[in-house]
Figure (tube, helix red, strand yellow):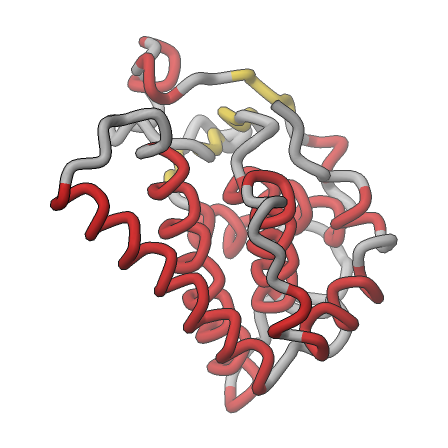
Length: 198
């Protein structure tokens, strides 16, 4: 398999954390890609010019981290990260969606840094920051347990991105239960081996 990636992307981190948890990370060839430059090798596999984008051994191109993680969850014999059915499945997928939304807001806000802050842009940035704060409060009210499903992995990657890009805006004081959970899973291989760089 081939994965278009950037080591700073929280969505790439999520995919690689899933692969590590599934014990299949050694089957993935990493292709360093800057999606902002829309390189031809990425566009050939993902016309959206976004990462991560996975190409299977059969040549099937898969965009978007939730779809990639679902595909990876079907490979190998490790316990599934996406529960098959019932309340556990719904809870994991809802947590994943909220974490992905937090990452979207944080990444989007990061992309606006360095631009002139007119009123419209400042308002948009404030909305993204509010999304992050509300989502953190939601996770604080019901933090994950362990790192056993896609929802927990997604939350860990989202929090790691906040630490990576927004260290000057600490979140732990307002979310002590979430902070304690994050501390408890940060040394586990899926999270410890995928720290962002860049």
